[in-house]
Image (cartoon, rainbow, N blue to C red):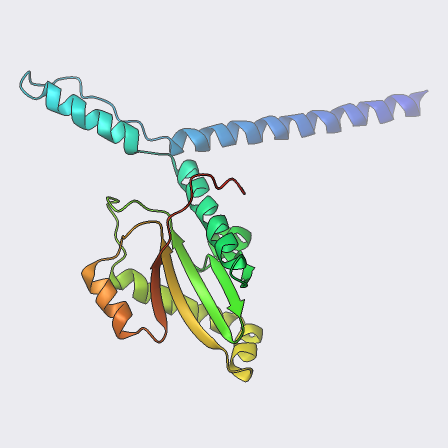
Length: 206
């Protein structure tokens, strides 16, 4: 009788600990979601001559601004789309970014066909995005890809031993590249390339 009581008592304590941990996680997630939401608020005082202009700007920003979580989903969906796009063309695809997440070294997809390896970075940005793909971003990606190869000697040896051609490819939904970046890519076209591949609206494989 006593042993049954002790077992029941211990089970209740363990269950309570599990519930408390679960509720703590929910609370933590809610806090993170709250931080991710960026809400534009109107100032308390506005001059009468600029109220109309401010309202217009406020509405534009409100429509364009999306949360970090929404940006992630938008980007990941495009990665899935590009992965399928190349699969349909006979490439073997590895969705590196979706698997490794923040530890992807900027490499969203690794593609292989015949004797060619493509390290792909996908950008689901609009052409009016405040960020552009400039030379620095491309050079940084080249550096990070080299570091990835260094940290993955098996892949490096396979590529070198079988004499695979390596190319770093930047793929976006719209033209987000600066003139300088395009010129730089053209000057290094043996290892660099950019493609503009719009995503179809009816793509739902996500």
